[in-house]
Length: 609
Ligand code: G6P
Image 1: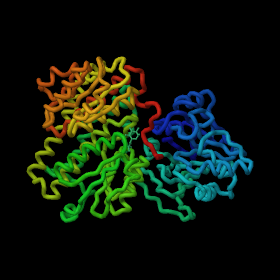
Image 2: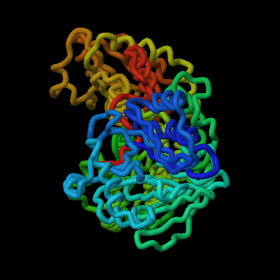
Image 3: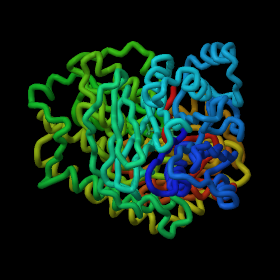
Image 4: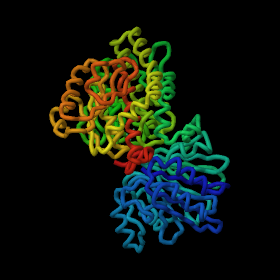
């Protein structure tokens, strides 16, 4: 959803900003731009359509010199992807430049007003109004002007601005879109996400909504509120493993991140399981409070929503608490029945998804306790929640979530076990047994990685297809949904998911000779039922792929390709089957010539509704 970056200090800004944009590119990659203040305080700017690499290539031919600059990578909302609509934007006098991530909802009114004042617009974006507002309201101080400008804006923003009148100064503002700043000996930085700052510092300051900051050339940062009150910074320390955000020999980040799952899951388990018990201090409530939870709302979008579907089934099965789960964009506008006995689980890899944040805020206002399950340290959801369960998957760069998804499933299982134990519904012996089962998952995932040839073979059934169906039952109906989403996201092939039993109530009509159908059919209590559904599609000529348990001879007659799951407890098959479905989606996407890390039209962090 766009990435912004700013730097001022003693060093040349161009390369630092470009490196930052490369790190932020997962947020949007349809165009990119950079503006640098040169020695004589003139703004020099280059923008290019396409990925950050295009911008970088242009700059190689004609570099920009200067030690203060801002940059942007875009995911189009208002105005098509084009050089003209790429950020940053200059004002009419070419002395002020601003980059924006977010959405200015009242831009049309502001544009009319500014046009009447004589301002000339050069783009179709909502964002450009900010530059002209700064121009029209400039009071001699960029940050003070930005405060006044923000009072006139409606919507969400992370803004970075600089001007010829105050060389060496960058002013930034945040409301609703993430922004972190960092004072360092080598200059002051601002960026949409802390990963862009990893090479420069381990201490970053996430701004909170309504905060402003001034970045100065001596590397200092001053944070203020809307009325100019100086705020004591609250830095967070990050133990970076910078190599985790690089390809490290893999052909793409998706492959790397799929391959990292055994280690990522082990890390999460090691931090939460000790001596046969689950440690979730975030949920620390005494027995009475745990017993008093009478409803759980799970708030999530996309892949995270699928993790929520799994969480619901386990929590209801073990902790006997009714769980409502819906995509946050729906729940946000629904009548929810929350009060102080409600627990809200906000599941979001990025911690920044607009609807997930808005919906968890709504539940919180109604009295619910909010627990965030997220991968990103210091993300908005993490700063706002009553407790945070970090997924500890390491940076996930590829847009399609893989390792964060399986970690969400593990985190969900831990929450379900914790609640079941706390409510006296599962004794210590059973908890220890379930945890032992869970601890065997990383090895099972590693085994699947060794067998990925099966996923490659299965991918061949999608050759020439224009649509496909993914089916699963029980805990694995969520797996079918996630498998279909993964395929859609990265291969652009239409894929629809249904609970297997529902297939005969409509979707079966699309099945014809050679139509690809994927079944997630481990040996569980609904196994026989799913086999019947497989027979139904086979009878209609479908090409069937199955994800099945090792040694399951019953499944053999019903599928052309089988991805065999190493033995695990039945309730853990959604984790292992997800890995096969990720691998298969990647192979299909590669065979269709798609960029698996940067699928068209998608962004990793969607910060507008
Ligand atoms: C975007 C991504 C999806 C992701 C969804 C939710 O739409 O393209 O892959 O599942 O956001 O993201 P979150 O960060 O909240 O898990």
